[in-house]
Image (cartoon, rainbow, N blue to C red):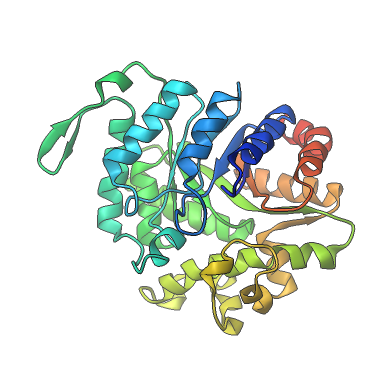
Length: 332
C-alpha cells in the first residue's frame, strides 16, 4: 500500500512546502492539495513550489475539475509539472464541488466530464487529441514519463467514466462496503469498454486521526462525512435511492445545511448532524493499532493507496507517527 496526504493551499505557500517535505521525509509516497480557487489560494502555484523543493514524493490535485480550469490548460499544467518533477505527477479529476458551487455553477455534466478527462489524459502525455474540431499536441511533453489519470466519483455514470478513462478511482471515504460497490460499478464499465478491470486501482481518501480519545477524534472528523453528503445529495437528485448503497445514503436523513465557507474545516458547524457510527465508517480514527487494523481491512479489499486529509493540528507529529509505526508495516 502507498500513502498520500492532502494539505490545504492556505497561505503561506512556504508552510505547505515545509509539510510536503516533512511527508516525504517520513516515507509518504504522494502529497496533494485542493483545487478550489475561491475558498483557498491557487493550488497550482503550491504544487510547483513543492516540485522544486522535493526529490521523490508524487504531486497532484485532490481533485481538479474540467469546469473551472479549461481542459487544455489543465493538461498543460500537469505536463509542465511533470517536466519539473518527472514521473512524480498524477491527474486526479472530478466533476467539481466547492470550486464550482462557490461561483454559482453546478458540477460539470457527465458527458462533458468524460470528454475532458479523455482529452487531458492524451494531451498531458504528449499524444495528439481532437478538441473543438482541432488537432492539438503538446510536442514538448512527448518524451516525459506517463502521467496516470485517477477519476473521482460516487454515482454510476461518473464511475463508468472512471472505468472507461481512468487508471484509478478516487474514493472519498474509507467504508469497505461502499468501496466494494464503487469499484464494482467502475470495473463493470471498464470490462464493457474492453479494458482489464483488474488494473483499475482504488485510491481511498479520508481523515486519519491518531488519538486515544475516540470522542475527540470523531469531533475532529465530522466535517468529512458532511462534505461527502454534498455529493450524495447531488446523486439523489438523479438516481432513485434504491440504486445506491444504504450505507452511503442513510446518514443524510439528519442533514440540515452546508456552509461552503467552512468547507473541509475541522469543527465546521454543518458537521453536527454526522453520527459517531458514520465517522467511524468513513474515517480512520483511534490508536496506532486501530489505524493498522483498518488499513489492513482496506488492503484486503484491494485498496492500493490511502490518502489522508490532514488539514490542521500537529501535522509533523502525525507524519512522524505514520512514518515510524504504520507506513513500514503496510508499505513493506
